[in-house]
Image (cartoon, rainbow, N blue to C red; front, side):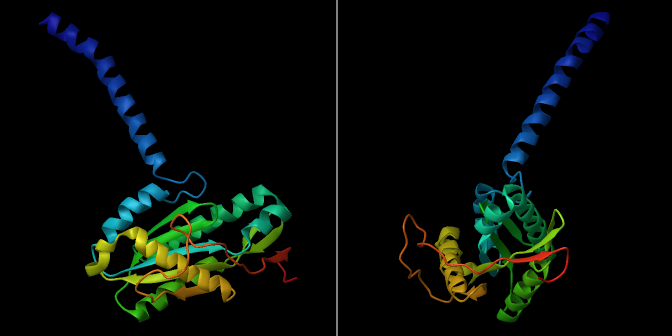
Amino acid sequence: MSGLLTAAAAGVPLAAGWSWHALRLRRRIVAARRDPLTGLATRAEFEQQGAVSLQRGPRMVVLLDLDDFKQINDRFGHAAGDAVLTAVGHQLDAWSAQHVGLVARLGGDEFAAVLPVYSYADLDQTMDSLAAHLGVPVAFEGTELRVGYSAGVVWCHPSRAALGLSVWLRRADEAMYAAKRAGGGWHLGAAPEPTAPAMNGRRPGRTGAAVTVVAGGESG
């Protein structure tokens, strides 16, 4: 009996060690699925979960980037750029949660989302809600930065989900380019197939609108 107790006691540290190792591994896996700056899903996680979401009902696919984000980095430094990305990430996360969707940072100042919508009126309301969330200025060292955005939107019925998320993202990307050319905001892509010339699956460069800076919380 004492031998069994001794053996069991000896196994406790080993079991605890494996438990701690498993916990650390799980945390590393979770961290790998989240962008460290914004806390949003990474591209890989978005591609996996977004493809599943498309099969579960009517969805809108959104591709969004910030207008002239580079000007913020050039004028105020990369710390300001990081502050903007962090704030936008939180705003997008709140917007996505409100509509029971999925949002990710694809890289740089580019974001993507998949959200359930059941009509064009629903889509309009969801994008109006996005404008309200992103309309909040970002405070940085006594200055408020108002950052515009351009977004491309496509509406996917589950019967066409088999086309693949990458196809819908490319269509959303083309719609975003149209929004950029129009001066920002969002544009609904309606073409059944991508039409803009692309390189490596992506369209060529974008235009942008100016960044509005409000110093000391007052309009300049």
